[in-house]
Length: 395
Image (cartoon, rainbow, N blue to C red; front, side, top):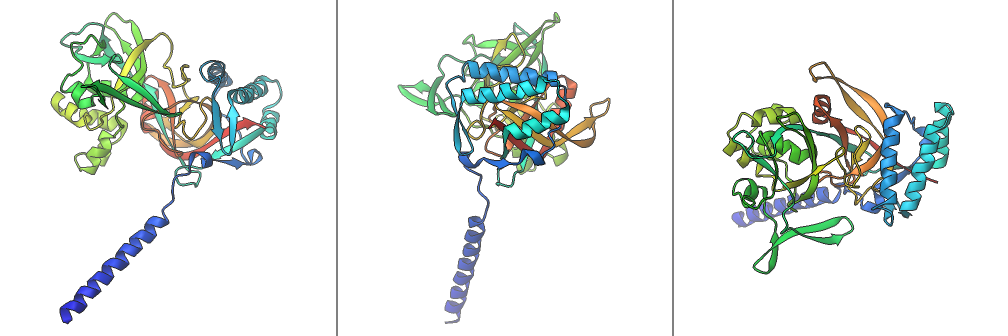
């Protein structure tokens, strides 16, 4: 009888514990659905100060206008509770551009923007308006158009056996055919370690450093300097359809790396101290693989237009309208002459939503394009801030 009582008490304790867990799970905030990702805000309560020059903003606006006149011409965009045509998005940019280039005082410009535009705030991942901002940049690598002992790490162009299927407006399935059926495309390990693409003439160019090549895969575009001084630009062309997984986070979870080495700069320095075999083993955790192409212009975003340093952002197109005008508020790093962060300051800025990324998912993530060079690398590598994201639409 005593054992029976003990057993009943244990069962009761387990049930109470499970009930508590279920209760806690029930009250965990859920990410807003796409139609709820933007909520109305009062533009008159917002100080629409921009910390950069007007010329870069005009450049970014014109690139979105080209998108709405071209590949995005017939698209319909979901903004809060309404369906908005590309023509309406275009009219928003033109009206804003006209205010921007007018001779009226800055205060009058801000008043007109507040009066003439609907302001919509991103709800964020938990619906509290907090959005996580990170940065990306255009890295510089040393390379060669022919394979040598020094330049032996290839960038591949998209393989012809990739099969791309449109699943929904914002989702595609990437695979290959094997014995008459579709199977997932080769993983990073199969490509880099097993060499399944070697000997097929798919090499675009070769570079000298596998760690820097991984940075290029992460950033999506970059410049490659040849030994004769020529500079070539490569940009994202396709991916293998595998999910993005953070190799750094995996190492942290397994206590194989100190938190001090988990920053972008710290992880690269730590990784360069490993052997080639160890590097490939670590990086293979991220199965996603990027294929490249040469471009004549600046890095090209997901709209098919060049991205503008400090003015282009990447978001999840399932939640936020492509090409749209936006306004951001957060902190940015201030660097010393050695590109080290000395402090962080508040800033705000108008930007254009012109890119997307495999790691930028959901209503609570924004990636800011920081440009090219060591300063851009330092800013992008140290930018990880909670801030606010607003979109503007002509009333």
